[in-house]
Length: 194
Image: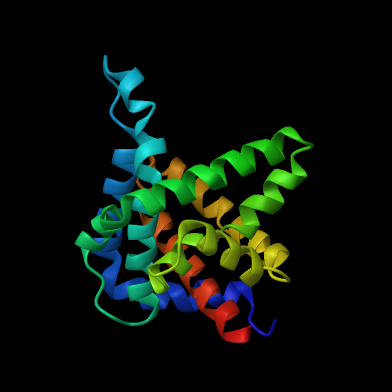
């Protein structure tokens, strides 16, 4: 493990710099769809995250990988996951079920499962020929030996999200694309080292 999380965050921020505008727009739309508007249709919006998180997660992974690979990211990538809707839905649903079951059994197994499946949508973006279960398995294998390091990376973003919330919530739209792109860099690093 020759890379440092802090260095990864700094380098990713530099890669993201020319794309902050589109990154903020992607984060805003992502959170708007998954958060849903408050209205009389609250019961309907409760199922939206279950139905749309998978495809949107794949789209965000495609967008983030374009940034870290120094390609041209574009807003429409957020919705490209819908072309593989069933696969992304099943991957997210299976992850959700396993994480919830793990959390019920003493919390720690749920955290471990969450960390183990954290690279699923990046793998799906890279290898669309794989089934959802193969992507989950690949993530489980790829993250072996790197899960604590990934947990440390995720924890480093908590103060940034806190500051984003203090900035009337607007700062969250700046932190989210940075966090997702850093996750993509983490994926690239562990893939290279494996």
